Each structure stands twice: as structure tokens, then as C-alpha cells.
Amino acid sequence: MTNGNIWAERFDGEWKAVFELQDRMVGEVATALKLRLVTSEQTAVAGGTTNPAAYEAYLLGRELELREKPEDWIEAVKYYEQALAHDDAFGNAAAALAWMYREAHWTEARSKLLGVSQDEARSRANAYFAQAAKNPSPAYYRLLAGRLNMMQKSDEAIAAASRAIALDASDPSNYESLSMAMIFNGRVEDGLDNLDAAARVDPAWSRWRYFLAGLAYFSTDRYEEAVVALEKIGPELKETSYWDFWSGYSGLMVLISSYGQLDRDADATAARERLKPYLAQAQEPEYTGLMAAVEFPFKDYVNLERLLVGLRKAVVPELPDGFTPKRGVRLDAGSVRTLLFGHEIQGRNVRTGESYRKRVGTPTYQLTR
Image (cartoon, rainbow, N blue to C red; front, side, top):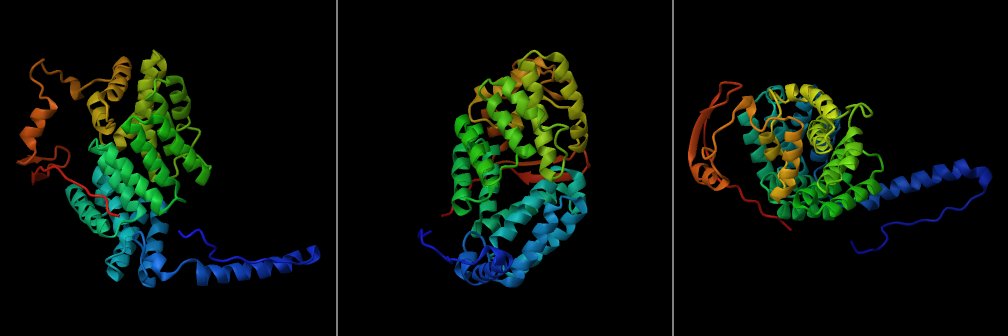
């Protein structure tokens, strides 16, 4: 932060003693790292902790989470909870739990894995998110950016993702988070620039990064380039992480629309077949334009319309189960907002049969400096 050196040393020796010199250098660097690189004051910054037991539990949870095996998530949650028990101001641990329960909310199988209902998973995700906000970390700001994107608040999402980068410029996920916010905001070239920044930190392109590149190209009518990027998500890359599912799922949606825009009907049909296993895992009977409108929250409708036009050309239905309401029956956004926001609604989960009652409000988020 001060642009000053934390530690420096010079090593001299003869080439014939290079291995002895190497051992001495490694030992001195290791000592310097242990004693000087990270101070207790620095670890408390950006959602960290100065409690060794809390940090050890967090690292054990992180290692299990990154294995990406469902059964490991159970143990990861336990370790993160232990970390918070040791230090309830440990923002990184709270953000990790908020993310895991948020993902568990999306599918019944994953929520059952953690021993909660989907509604309970959502409730816990919100509670841990609120706790993480008290001591914000880069992971918290990435979560915040994702939430703001889905609310079509990409301006605020850009600010949140930028804050994550300011706190940790060495994590490629932060640049990818900002890239997505930029793309939804209509600043596509800036989005691509941030993918380049992510590549400078980590040159290995993931499936998720190819998805973001494809979405950026698609958003500027560069459909051929979008197809090239999105096809790299396919068989060329083996699914090795949880995020690979989402990049494949979302990537195929944009790929189908790209083929539709290019009038490549046979390719669009083949891509729709490739989407079916993802739909089964997401517990969706079919993909529709209505789902795309929810899952791609562009700031400007013209960008969403580009996606919907491609899907229509690819013979993707606009609404589920062939439902085609008469003109004049459908509510506009303002009417839906008036009907729902500020009111209590009750209903039943059509998949699980679970009844619910909840009050619909408009959530607000504030960036913390």
C-alpha cells in the first residue's frame, strides 16, 4: 500500500554450489514470509481474522469446498461454521457459507445434501450474507455483485466487483465478476478487457471464462466469434468443478441463440439436445425465452431482445408447456411490481409440495468502504 519493500535480500555464490545456495535461499525466504510478509493487522483487513484456530478451520473448509464433490460440501460447511464460532467477525467464512447455501437453494438435491429445504437454504444464505456484510471481503463483494446483477442493477454491481479487485487484485475471479457486470451493463469492451486482466493473473482459461467471452461477443452481434468461444466449453474441456455446470448450462443457452441468429438450424437442434442433461439436473422440463429473460439481466432491453430473437429462430418456446396467453392478458413490469412488492403471498412449491408464506419486498444493498 505504501509502495515500499517488505523484504529484500541478495544471494551470492559459485555455480558448483548452486544447490547449497538454493537451500539457504529457500530457508531465508521461508523465514521472511513467516515473520514479515503478513502482519496481524493485515489479516484483519478485508474480512480476515487474527484467530489462528478460525483461520485453520477456514482453510480446511476451503480445501474441501474446492474438491467440488457433493459429499465434501457437508464437511466444508462444518469447518466454516467452526471458523465463525472461533471468530464471528470472520467475513471470509461468512461469505463462504452465504455462497454455499445460495447454491444449495437452487436445486433440491443440493439443499437436501446439506440437510435443509430450499427455502431454509435461502434463509441461511441471506443470514450469512448479512453477517459477511459487517466485515466485507472480496468474496462478499463478488456475491453482492451477483445479487445486484440479477436485480438489473449492473451499475452498482460494477462498483461492488471493483471493490473486490481493490481488496485482492491477485484473484482472477474478481476480474471475471467485474467482466460479467460490465457485459450486462452494455460495456462489452470493458468486459473483454477484464477477461484479459483475469488471464494475466491466471493464464489458464476456464469454461466460465469462455462463457463470459462468448456472451460478450454475442452482445455485439459477433455471433461467429461467440460460437467459437462457446463451443470451447463443450467436450474439449472436462467438467472438473461446480462452476463447470453453470458455464455449460448458460453457455449452451447463448450458443443456441447464436446458431439461431446465424440460421444454422441443424447446429441449433444439436445444441438443444446437448442442453437436456443440464435441464434434468436443474429440474427444468424445458428451456424457454421466459427463463432467458430472468437469467440474463441485461440493463438495456435491446441486448435481451437479441438473445430472445435468436432463441425464437432456434424454435425455443417463449413460455413453458406451450402456454400462449392472449394479447392484453399479460401484465407489464409495473403491474407485476404493484401486485407483488409490499404484499404477503402464499403458495406451494410445485416440485416439493412444500407450502410457504412470505412478504415480498425490494432488497437494498450498500457498499461498505
